[in-house]
Amino acid sequence: SVLTSAASGVPTRATGPTGNTMVAVSADARLIVRADSEGVLSIWRDGTLTAPPATVHSDGEQLFALSLRQSGGRDQVILGGQRTASVWDVTDKPRELAEFGADTVGYSAAWQGDVALVGTLDGSVRRVDLSAPESPMRLPDLTIGAETAVTGLAANDRFVLAGGRRDRIEVFDHSGAAQEPLAFSGTVLGISASPDGAQFLAGSTVREATLWDGATLGRLLSIPTSSVVNSVAHLGDSL
Image 1 (cartoon, one colour):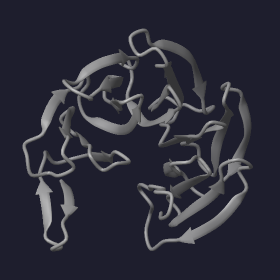
Image 2 (cartoon, helix red, strand yellow):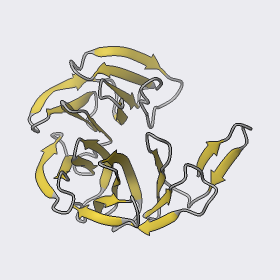
Image 3 (cartoon, helix red, strand yellow):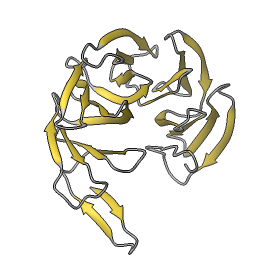
């Protein structure tokens, strides 16, 4: 389910199917999107959950990844899941801009500028350039070097970080060239870039979250947790 709270502290609940639920909110808090275990994308446009959402069924089945961006006055969403790695324009009536994963499972998603990134179940990161949204261009895949799910994915204008292999995070520069991996304890379950790209935050299977500098990739902080960190979000002024 998705929850929001008002000044009264009483939450508003929007229920959905059991199973995986991913939620993203726009920077201006106007747009709320949810991807679910039945392959459905739900869209609330007024910043609340009180009105029935617009819905669209993706090209796939169960969804595992969701990433939202606002650019040039448009709202665009990456979806990853069973038999899909797709990009949708949800500004008005939802329409698909690109499908580049009908043969795989999309497991994680992120934006790097105009490039949509989807980490797959087989250890690759698929990339599509949407600088011309009506003519999306597929770019060469990145690979984390093992046939394992890309469990975490984040990017800024310098780097792409991809998790999945134990005790390391793969690093690629803006051109897609592999760099020295980051040493990391356990397996990454989620990575998030701060809104300005200045920092990366990652959570792992060893009850710890780690903060890195987005320019140098130097480790800034390790945060012990009481349990496995399944997902993270860097909001700029809070984690």
